[in-house]
Length: 179
Ligand code: IMP
Ligand code: MG
Image 1 (cartoon, protein in one colour):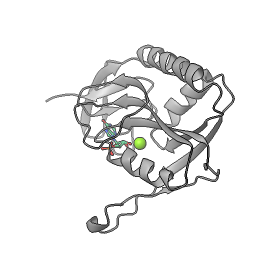
Image 2 (image 1 turned 135 degrees about the horizontal axis):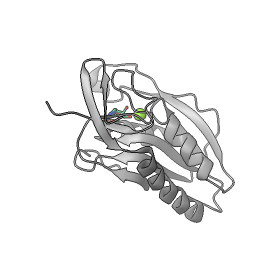
Image 3 (image 1 turned 60 degrees about the vertical axis):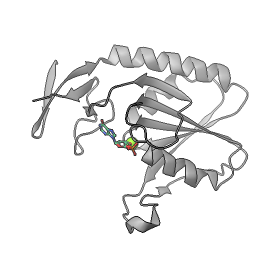
C-alpha cells in the first residue's frame, strides 16, 4: 500500500517494515554487546511502543526482563509542570540498569517526565531506546542512548504509532501527505 486514509487524513508510505526492522537489528545488536553483563530491565511505555518492544525483544539475546507501563492522561493545572504520571511498574528498579522503550521522542517532553519520575526510584543506570527520533523538534535535554531511526519533522502513523487512536496496526510507517 502506497497510501492510506485514516479518518479525514491521507498518509503516504515513508518507511517499509523491512527498513524499520533492519534498523531494529542494528540497535538490538548494539544493546546485546553493551548490556550483556547488566541484567537490564526493559520498561515498555504503552501504547505506542508495543510493536517496537516486541520486535526488539525477539532480537535481545542477553539475560533481561521486560515490564510494561502507561502514562496517565490525568491533566493537572499547568503550574504543576507534571501533567502525566507513570503507572503500572511493579518491579523494584533500585540499583538496576533500566532501559526505557519508547516508540518516538518528539519534543522530548514525555521522556523527560518519565526519566524524572523513574530517577526517584534510584536505578543504577537509566537508559533510553526509541524506535524514532525527530532531532529537529527536540526541546528537552533528553539524549536517547539507542535510536533505531532519525526522521524529519513529519507526523507519522503505523508500527504502533497512531492518528487519533487508529493506524497502530499498520506494518509500515506512513507520513501525513502535504495537501
Ligand atoms: P513528546 O512528548 O513531544 O516527545 O511526544 C511524544 C509522544 O507524542 C509520543 O509518545 C507519541 O505518542 C506522540 N507523537 C509524537 N510524534 C508523533 C507522530 O509523528 N505520530 C504519532 N504520535 C506522535
Ligand atoms: Mg508513546
